[in-house]
Length: 124
Image (cartoon, rainbow, N blue to C red; front, side, top):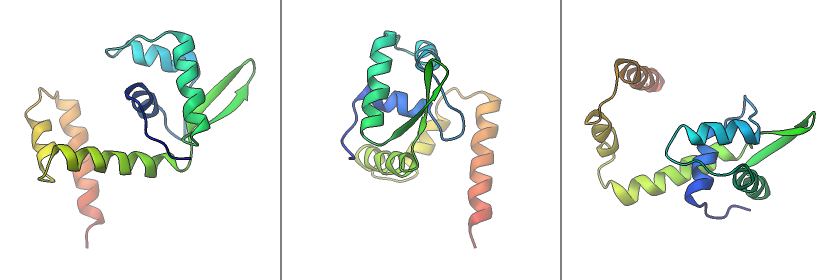
């Protein structure tokens, strides 16, 4: 089932990937480094809902679950990003130009350059 996501669900999904499993406590700690600091039970509920939507998979490790994005999550993230992008930016390059207006440090700029270089290598 691919239902719409709330803001906290999107934020939590953005913290997960397929390779490294994260516990509820790990996700809660990562969220508290940003703007929000939801309760442990709130994070657990959000992860459970994402699991129910098929966007997150979980595996039992000792007394806890570790959460990773499900195989269909990257496609979902891409479609969601394209939806947001098209509604906010009629010009496809506008989001990248907006990034350059931010106070990015050298490391962030180098990562952006690496991503662009990688994409250029994929082009014929």
